[in-house]
Image (cartoon, rainbow, N blue to C red; front, side, top):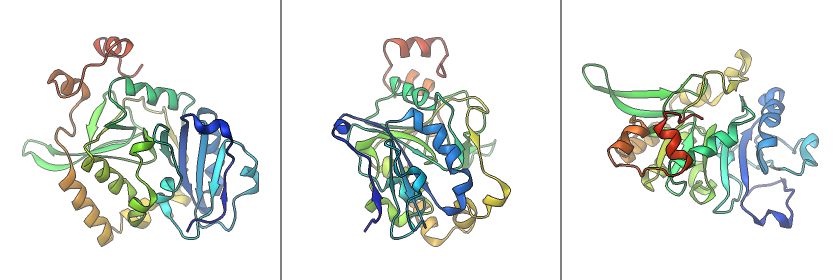
Length: 279
């Protein structure tokens, strides 16, 4: 059961919305507002799961674009998936330690000119299990949101601090809560099993920024869960690797040239022909 739900909805919200979903906890209270200020002007609705809070902060209670909840249990990163969405909403899952640039939403959405949102998920942090080096040993290749990425690349899973997807494709809480702490893996597996491709997008170095500090790092899920690698996480990773689909690590352009993705039309085709996937 989810408790202490605060929803600022009105009848006009029957139209599809651009949404951002965020999960946070008290240790991040000092940096949370920076993330909120960076993303709120870009979306119709910002949904925040306040894990480990007794109540929703009063400062946010009257903001009409914010829906908030304080769950009766610690949902961790699964809290991003605790909100109801419409099938045709466009949902961004975000993190509380990232600053999103003013053109983050419009730029990210523009890449749906190249792929069908019904069977594609976009992001700016991704991982592909690929053959590496002269010996072809399998390992992870990573694309990080803080570093320049000049290409649109098919990956095996995305970091859920930077994803964009249709509401109809968004995993629901009951599907993902058992992977709380490592939802990126479950999120990727569910999309792979459904036949949806995941793409990491081009971006410049410094386009996005991190507000993570040394004193906060010890409470991050990377340190408290990923470094520990509990058995449930290892099982989920194995399931993801079994579910992964072909061509991970391949550039969009190469897959299109091989006829494995449809050629875009109109302005998107011109961007592609001119080698301007980023703008």
